[in-house]
Amino acid sequence: MYMNYQKRSQHRQVKTQKRQRHVYQIGTFLILGLLGIIFFTTDLIPTPQEFHLRRAWKSSSQTYKGQYSIAIFSEKNGQTYTYTNRPFKHDWVTASTVKVAVLVALLHQEGGALSGYEATLARQMIENSDNDATTTLLKTYLGGYDTLNQVYEALGMKYTHTPTSSWGLTTTTPKDQLILLKQIFQDSDYLSTSAQTYAKALMANVEADQNWGISAGSEHYYLKNGWLPDDKGHWYVNSIGYIPSDPGANNGYLIAVYTQNNASLATGENQIENLAKVVPEILQ
Image (cartoon, rainbow, N blue to C red; front, side):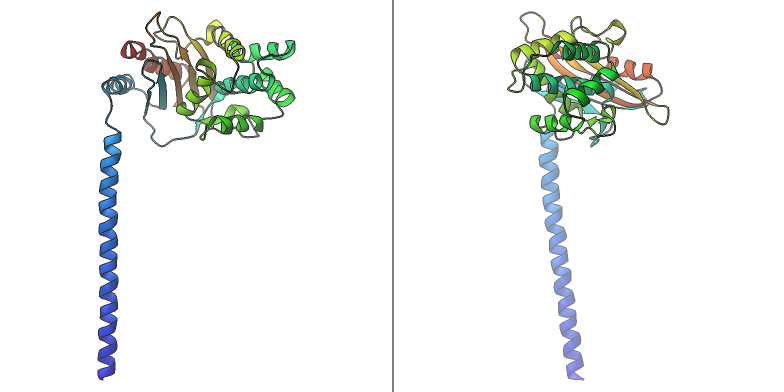
């Protein structure tokens, strides 16, 4: 009988010790969690400029039913500003905005000196958003779609991926696209100065019916847009590019806007322009 009592006592002690360890672990996790929340929210305290941008973007999107994400890089202060109504999403479909990546890959490979036919295809791809020209460049001159993934890796675009099935279904984030745009519009070890000048000339000369988007509210701009219906009848609509500085102001900025679940192409265009047109005044 004493042995049974001793066993029961030992069993109770083990259970008590386990409960104590469990409570200690929970307490530790809670403390670390609270510390993490403090650090996390402190990092999220916006600057006055960021506050005004986010407030303007939120206000301009009150009636919008789709999802959107925007990122800009200010040349004036070197800061990146982002906003989205779909947090933690890292797979925005690029549609034809991926053609800028194709252009960067081609110019890098050729050292900025394109052959006559390469130049023709590049112009058609960017200025006219020609899909056949894009496919030809990728398959004939760049060795296939996976070459783009090598470009993303080299540039540190960790959330961007092109599937082997369709370049138009490349997924990305606006912040990744800022990395790409910097290769054209900022100092770059990836593209030569002549290659940058060539890319700028194409992006400044898109055909008239394709110059909507991030151009809203700006007199001068360089851009590439993308639009694609999904299998449910909704639209991916995107716009990326660069708004140059006013003379002597150093207030130029890179910008990338991605949207999805738009009821129509026009709906996406309007949303992008509503987001874009509030930026110039705030960044002055």
